[in-house]
Amino acid sequence: MTTVRTTTRDPRLLRSRLDEWLAAKHPGAHSRGVHLPAANGLSSETVLFDLAVPHPEGTARQRIRPCVLRLAGDPDAYAVFPTYDMAEQYRVIRTVAARTRVPVPELLWLEPDPGPLGAPFFVMERVPGRVPPDVMPYTYGGNWLFDASEEDRARLERSTVRVLAELHTVPGEGTLRAHVDAQRAYYEWVVDGPARSRLIERAFAWLEKHWPADPGPSVLSWGDARIGNIVYDADFSPVAVLDWEMASSGPRELDLAWLVYLHRFFQDLTVTAGFPGMPDFLDRDRIAATYAELTGHTPRDLDFHLLYAALRHAVLMLRIGHRQVHFGEREMPADPDALILHRDTLEAMLEGRHR
Image (cartoon, rainbow, N blue to C red; front, top):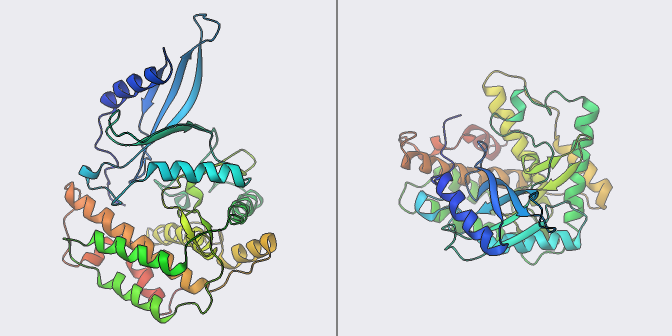
């Protein structure tokens, strides 16, 4: 678990420019407590602040509203993705809110102009609750999810699958072929300059040899369907589903496999570090059975989709590794595949040694 830079932006400059923008939106409005959380992601940046606006009755009191600002990644700072369509993310969240019962934060503003903050962004409400940590991963222990009872974990698991079942009631427009082609194009962008990955290219070849006979109908796909992108309440139920920058469309199994695989990724890291982790959590067969119970659709071709999830994550890991090299956080290894944290797992999956 090496250090990874999550932002190159100056929080003080960001606050002053944000206050200028807020004042133009609402006279007298300003921000309080602007900060970039330590657990910020490596793509679109998350900025937390409290929005203060004058009281409508003209008193000295102010109305305070906790907010989140999602800012497109800086293309000059070795961004993780080639483009950041914040307007599309905003549209997806609005669609989910209008067409499903999936809980999403209330959207407040979209700013497509990069002028005010240096990149397009949108603002939404901040929903209180608990999020399973990524750093250190929840599987390592010492957090609310790890310490929860088996009954509470089961409640969280089932309610999370219910989120996917509800989301997938929205039809999609793309296909599995289009999704894989887009992922291959992303890989080509990642290795445009740096050395290519033999492991990732083996995985792409494996997909072609094991292509599903019938990929199934297309639905709206969350893309980054994992518990670390969900805010849960004290009852272990989702109250806000976050991070829609990888949203697209394709078979239902894209999200199901990502949910299962990302836990497996953290679990494998934890076991490698000498800790037991949470081996029985987000079990593949139980997740598939729960989804079938809730939707009537029995997930299929899960071996294919789990390997595809590991492949997608490998491309991300490769780009993040290149980013670390760019910022001097690590040296470029002789074998580029060493940048992929789950290299051994992906190799085992390709060879049929890992279920």
